[in-house]
Image (cartoon, rainbow, N blue to C red):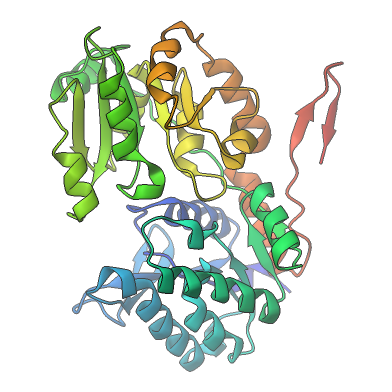
Length: 389
């Protein structure tokens, strides 16, 4: 098939611009590469009443707005149904459809009726997330089970997720991780301005950028920072990500201004975030459920040190870099981190070898051509010879 004539749909995310999370960033990066190679991309977005069912464009990508739900926990479920119905009606417009997140099961099921070739990025182990009630956890698990039975091609963004699907569901998935974004250039005046804006001193604060959800552990982490003595030593803990005023988020917000804790709104300014990461003493990663987390990749690209929750996903992404913690030992780990060496060069090197968006996009393109993803990781042996896997 001539790739210049291929039309690919990307469904199941909040769409573009990528102002929410990892899936949106992945769709942004993959479709940018596709467009450069002459592949038409339609990105399905959650729209408001005015945008619903209208189309737009964003940097060469077609945007299709789909109605969601006012109820936050039902938004993905409802929007997936509307997306699936749209795809059935417009099935002749697409040659391939990518779905992201098994929670979109109704839309994925409807897409099977279109006869259009499809692949599903499974996401992480959603049923383990603390924010979900038992009925929602059951829905996520059963959705994943049936998707494994019904869908030919599944994508896992980490080897740990891939291994879980093979063991629990007896399903082989294609491994394609995420990539790390390029960092934004800035001058000394810009750095001074941004640090001044947030009242920060270079090298004197810890940083966490995350959605305020229990499985990302923001509340638990700031409590442990408060229990450590770092606040008394002049260090601050900067937590970025306040968006929805949930009960959990409000508990976090209430801690701002105590013992060096500073809670800030969600921030999508790439230059500001690059400066804040570069100037932090250490980045803290608490995402305990999921696969290859984009926030961790961004931190590896632009911070000097990382403390990460002790779990298989952190181990897979960081390798020998960073220091692991549990909530039980974190206050001591905070203090011990004052003796950590700068690992920025080592982490950048690992990113270069393992997590590149151009390789990610190429693997997604292979999927559209009914090939194996064939995501290639370049590693270096202790003798210095390069091998691929």
